[in-house]
Amino acid sequence: MSQQSDLLKRRRNRVAAQRQISEKKKSEKKERVEQLRKERAKRYYEKNKQKKNFITNYFQMNEGASTSGVKQRALTSITFCFLLEENPNQNHESVT
Image 1 (cartoon, helix red, strand yellow):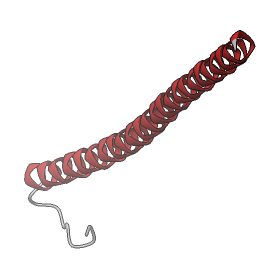
Image 2 (cartoon, one colour; image 1 turned 180 degrees about the vertical axis):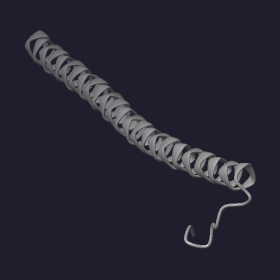
Image 3 (cartoon, rainbow, N blue to C red; image 1 turned 180 degrees about the horizontal axis):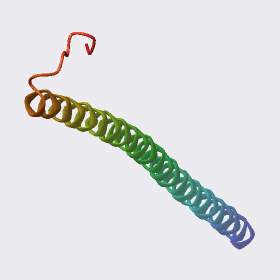
């Protein structure tokens, strides 16, 4: 009878040990999956942040270029008008 009880104890201990090992593996796998998920999210966030910065910089550069062009045209128009007012007796028909 004691032999049977010893066998049962060993079997229960083995099953308990296997259960602990499998639970430990599951928790390690969950941790790895969670870590990978966080890394993917971080990469995705950084990639989108770079895209937004690129788009913002692109429009800022183009906005600056178009604004400077508008300023340049306005300055040219003002100068031209000033020259017309300065010399009213000259024939300005050829200048258009």
